[in-house]
Image (cartoon, rainbow, N blue to C red; front, side, top):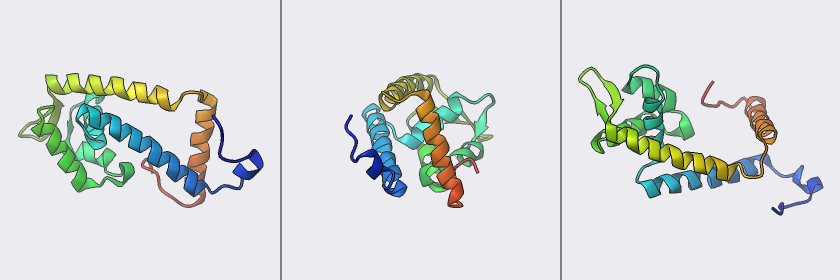
Length: 152
């Protein structure tokens, strides 16, 4: 890969631009790949929350975790949960418990395999050490600017 600038020039480049460019490229690639499967990224998040949960979850449990993901918001997440129910991937009991259907589990497994492929694609040529450093540096930028990340 050829970098945009020399090392001396790169250290003077704005983090805001490059973090935005990385965000845009990564999220666009993920959303495009999920759209090819017939779903949205927020629907994937909902399915993943249900598939990986140790205990059954209700709508409030799921939205509490996901509402701040990429500024999605509570209302949009409720719409996405409704879409997973309408598609037959999730059932919602009278008590509000959300559960994957057999079809939802099969679709989740298919989408999870695609997500694994995307992970490998994104991480090509990047060591775990480099990745860890990158995340720590980005979190330091969030901290230094009094920002908030989803886990705060």
